[in-house]
Length: 384
Ligand SMILES: [Zn+2]
Image (cartoon, rainbow, N blue to C red):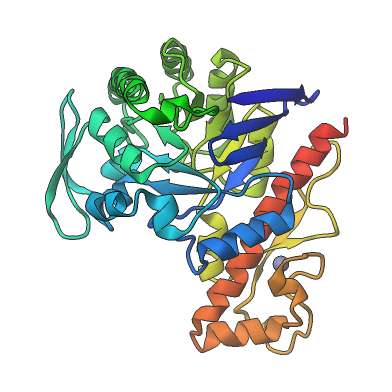
């Protein structure tokens, strides 16, 4: 269930998303644990990190059906009664349906109206994903929020391909909704106060605004628990991404959460928030950390109070110029890396000698930076 508390003059929304594992204040960012771990961090460490930034909101993580299906596999997940227990996560979890990964990672795909046959990118084994099977795997993973199985047409795509993607995505979302409705009526879990599993549909339509609108209108008919905008941040110019979001949000119900998948840079997140988006995920904080790129405050606040801009810079911590730098990684940050007495020179040294601790320290910082960004966005919306 989603409660919208306030809409800011800019269009930004402030609300609360209630899940079986707690209430999350929106807008929020989900760190990515595709394979069952946010890279270099344990679930307890991630929980403490999220609570350290804002103890008033439930920590949240994102995982992925395609990756969990391949490894560890459904037998292991079933044995442990889901990924929460397997990875030791007590917060909220969302799983992507695997649609995007089947089309972007796997080999030799065969697409039919029923689903998609593909070869694993790991061992070449053949598998078939249908909307129903994606739901079944997500039910075994046991996440709080399940994403409908969608068809991403790639980018760039012809208009014909995008039309096909929208039609198939609507048809598959209907089948997902029917599967989830039947699941909830046959499990005891449906007696719980909060719906144990929520289904979000994914709007496709690439950069064609009329097809984005059509996709949104068709999916809203299904009365899902939330709506995502998918198939963006895949190489299109940022302005086209914003235009696509603007084509979708006016057609979504105001009392349901909206999730922009896979976005993005801090300024893109702020722009999307002002277009009415509530939820985000992105690999950037952790991927950049592994490559030695650090998000830095410019002063003690990332977001201008009026939501006009984000203020930050990026630092290459591996640079020679860091060799004798005695400053903490980010002097304005309150994370354990920045307050633990470590210098930039020491962290650079860890990268130079390939110590795994390097990526870990900067991951803690970069994730904290993103969570702090969202907290400041929430405060700015609230204060006006
Ligand atoms: Zn820090």
